[in-house]
Each structure stands twice: as C-alpha cells, then as structure tokens.
Image 1 (cartoon, rainbow, N blue to C red):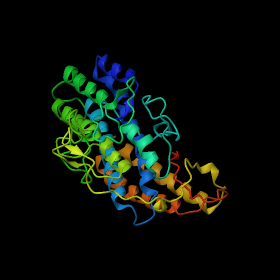
Image 2 (image 1 turned 120 degrees about the vertical axis):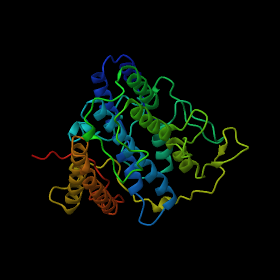
Image 3 (image 1 turned 90 degrees about the vertical axis):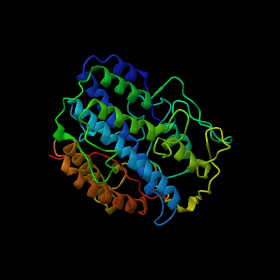
Image 4 (image 1 turned 180 degrees about the horizontal axis):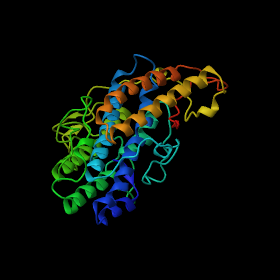
Amino acid sequence: MLKISPKFVNAVINAEKLEDLFPLLQNAIELEHATIPPYLTALFSFKPNTETAIRSVIHSIVIEEMLHMSIAANILNALGGEPHISNPNFVPDYPTHLPMGISKGLIVGIEKYSPDLVKNVFMEIEEPEDPLDLSKSFKANALPTFRTIGEFYQAIQQKIEEIAPEILPGDPKRQVTSNFFDSNLLYPIHTKEDAINAINIIIEQGEGTSTSPVDEEGEIAHYYRFQELYLRKKLVIDPNAPHGYSYSGPAIPFDANNVQPMFPNTKSHMLPEGSEERRQVDIFNNSYSDLLNGLHRTFNGEPDYINNTIGVMFDLRLTCQKLAETPFPGKEGYTIGPTYEFITTA
C-alpha cells in the first residue's frame, strides 16, 4: 500500500470538523490518480496480442485504482467538499515523487514494462505496512519511517465515525455510480456507515488483510499481484503454506521482445514542432486532458457524464498504443511514450 508522510495521518487525527478533511481527501484523490499513468504505460507498452497474462493483472489493478479514486471523490462529496481534478497541478510531472510525500527515495516515471519496474517501483508503491512473506526467494524492503495510505484511510474512517452525523451533509445528487464498476464497490455514499464500508474496499484491495494476501472477497491485493509478475508464478491456495497461499501456481511467461522500446519519460517538447509525431503526442495530451475535465464534471454535479469519460478512456488507449509503435525522431531504437501533460483550454 502506498507509503506516505506521517504528517497526513496526523492531520486526520487532529481534524476537528469535516471541513478539515477536505484537503486531505483531495490529496488522496491525487495520489490514487498518480499511480494510474505509470501502470497504464506499462500495460500499453506490450506489442499487440502478446503477454495476455501480464496484461490481465495490470489491467485489473488499473481498474481498481480508478475505483479507489472514484470512492475517494464520492466520500469528499458526501462530506460536503468538492473534488478538483481538471487543473495542471493535479497531474504529476513525471518522473517525480508521488503526492503526499510517498517514500522519499522512490521516483516514479513513465516507462515500458519490465520485471525491474515491477519490483523497484510498482511493488514499492503497493507494499503493505507488514507484507506477508509468501515467498522465500523474494521480499521487498520495508520502510518503517513512513505510514501507509491504508493507515491514512483508517484514520479517515475513525474521524468520520467520531465527528460526522449519521446522514452525511453532502448533496446526494453529486454521488457517482457507473455500470463500469460493480455496484457493490462503487455506490452512493449517504451515511457514515456507507463511507466506512467504502474505505474498507480501498484498503483491502490495496493490501489485503494483516493475515492474508486476499481481501474478504478472495481477491488478491495489489502488492501480491505485482509480486506474481515479478516471480512469474501465480499465487494460489496452498494449505501447507504459513498464510494459506504460495507462489506455486502456473507459470506467468514473459518475453522481453514483446515490449515496445518506448523512450522513458517522453515530453512533448522533445518532438519537432509541426511533425506528425508531435501531432500524435498532442492528440494524446488532449484526450488525457479531456478525460480529467470529464471526471471533474462527473464529480462536481454531473454524475451521468461518467459515460462520456469512459469513451475517452478508449481513445486514450488507442492513441497510446499508436505512439508506442512510432519511432522516436532522433532517438534511434526507441519509440514514443505517452506524456500525460495537461492542456488548459480557454
């Protein structure tokens, strides 16, 4: 689970009124979003019709990060706040530290898929407070000086229980649902109990439980799914293992030749003005900005606009895949990576 500066947990603990939680939940929305471009880029860096097993794992995690971002926005709305999504400050300038002071030594960039990226970045992002040692061959390093985003969400739960009324004060019409997500996972948050249960979804999907790598629904938490990719073995039920699971399932094959040679941390200014390559990057950035603008509208009073944003997501994928197949001018042997730069429109 994402490791953050302790000051954010302390700020929740010291909150005296619901309004004190508004900027903290905004931080959480920004952090949930910040993981999505790196994960998406790794997903889209594969050549067409290859590495289906790895794609499936990363795709499932991306969808859940989108869900977590949506839940956090619904909670902020339910408490009476307003999510802010469509502005340049919402978008990290990759490569960068992630929001909320996440793991000071961790720099997250926009890169093609590799086992090292999974181990050194993705697993570092998703590491639980106390990762279960399910494999004798690999265990990520702990960073004890940081708190996890799970602890942050638990503090939000406790503070809502402590100071919020049973019926939350936000406008119910601002709550967002979508057929894109299971209605048991993304649902309107009207009460204190709704908010607490929704936060449990985020925590368990991210890091499992303290005694198991799976959540209450039997779904493997993000950290352990990424560890599957690093070890190239499926995590399966194993009655003889200490926690009931081991990486003794079917092999997950990987061929590095199936990854596009995408240039890391591409920026639009690297492409010649007026070139077709620059035009494609601009198309990508416009689609990305349209997506954020659409999400802002969705979570600020137009919940039905979520259907428009889903269409933009597919456009973004197609543009990204086209970039990944396009040679990078002046950088022999590389193709163009997505840039995730916010375009402000008048």
